[in-house]
Length: 465
Image (cartoon, rainbow, N blue to C red; front, side, top):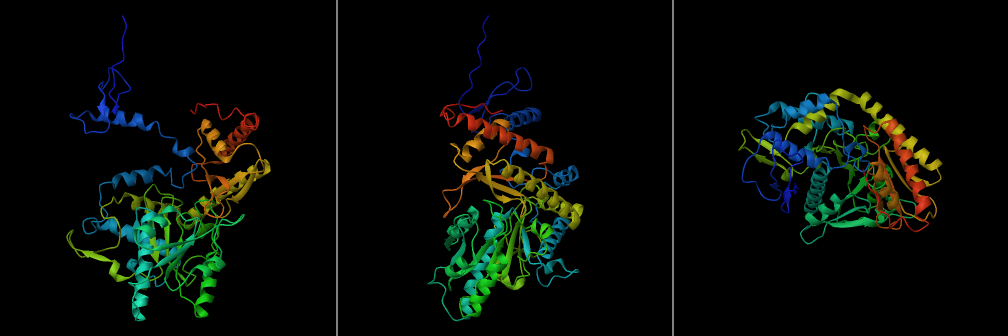
């Protein structure tokens, strides 16, 4: 007796187990006609998610992939609380304000009071992308106000923003969505950050602000914020335009204050008016949580703050989102209390030690030229040394056979001919795992050294498992 497999319609999900909770396929792109038992629904989704890569071995992402079990429990208890309902959930609202105050204090904001959390000017967001939009909008409105105060009409002008070609894509979105001309500063030979000289040459009276990055997405390097501010100070003193600076600290904002506390990049520099940071990166919290804070109340135009009362009480709001769960800010508050300054310092030093060890091993192997060694923030970027007959993309592909996800990509404008590999060292990448990663990198390049020059690697299909 022969048995045939039941046919599964296209765009349907078939169960993995026969004779158990559920045996019929369900449509993947349409709402099913009938309900199913919770265990069956769980199993359908759980099994499909097994096809995702391992988050712990995903070295492409900056996003946190591990938290204390106690933090996970607190966040699960807060899923159902809509953080925008501040009258209904006053404790969650208070926790958000405390987090904003802690971030503002960490970045040396002005006029902070120990007895008034509202003295910190900022908001929590779903991540740095929303935070960037809010910071950019505040700059655009301040530019308008400055022209109006001088008796000039801004409506006939095109505002511009000066930034490196190495910015994260959200800055491109901001400029396109809100009608701002982006002025991208190119990278250079062996230089992957912007320079003060480039900035001064690019700004004019229609520049709403300059973006400086604390931990670039491409290499993890820190742009010279203090030197950029000094150059703009000199320009303004000499009669040139008076241009503010926003620091995109999405990656470095929770690293630099602990690894490099004496480095001036934040509100200690008078020209810095706003800063964004991602809590779900080195703030060590699950996604999505971010913050944007301003130097003082003057830098956030009141016209951008809306007030609503249909949730009960008079509630100011300055966000692009409205309803969202309070669990992310609860998770961030847990980390702030759990770790404190000493705890964050210890975590960042450990991650930096691991990153610097890995970069040293890569450089010593003679296969790689290290671009950033993890001493700025725990990110290692490198390129292949010399002509090897294969590319960084081949190395990335080969590493997938070991389960590692290590991205390869080309650099931005001005350095497009350079391809790099990047490893983001996060909690969860232990010293043992880093050693295993290095061993697998060396196995990969050994395989490529043997196969690629012979010309038959391109024809081989590797089974990644």
